Image (cartoon, rainbow, N blue to C red):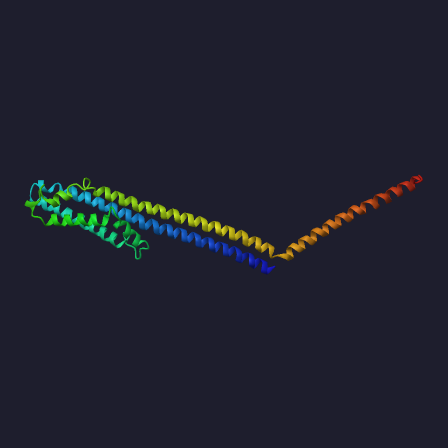
Length: 252
């Protein structure tokens, strides 16, 4: 009896252990995918925001009222440029979330450099043009300046569209990997259910004593009921004979 209880306990414990492991794997994988790919999409989005901010200030430079206003605008550009460079560097390392260890670094870098967009090259070109514009004397910053012309409208140059498409690429891969995790998790839970059911049926088959005892008790009860049926006939007959004898009616 004690062995049966221990066996049931171990069986339930094994099922719970497998279920817990499956849940842990699914939650951990989902979190890693979401944190990595969503961080990449957010970082690229910020690069686009910084580029638009820089271009907005660049367009004002040729019409600056005085040198103080011009220098103030350059200071704003440098601040946005530093933030843009930090994001660009994190994307080149494949670690936009700044994790101690990024499990999807190679894939994040591959998407950032993937043709035909090649976001890495286009962002670096934008950064280089900003540096060159900052080195240009104030008198040379005008509508004829090639660096100014390059930076004045990231939308027309297709820079913002490139940023948007790169973000969509990260989100597409994110959704695909998340779907894979969900499908694998469902498969694992189905396998656990099948194994649990199969194990339970096997456990029942390996308990012959209980089945024999049950069969014996069932057979005994059947025999007893049959004997009771047979016994009813002589009891009725004896009572009838006694009644007939009292009335002294000859029995035919």
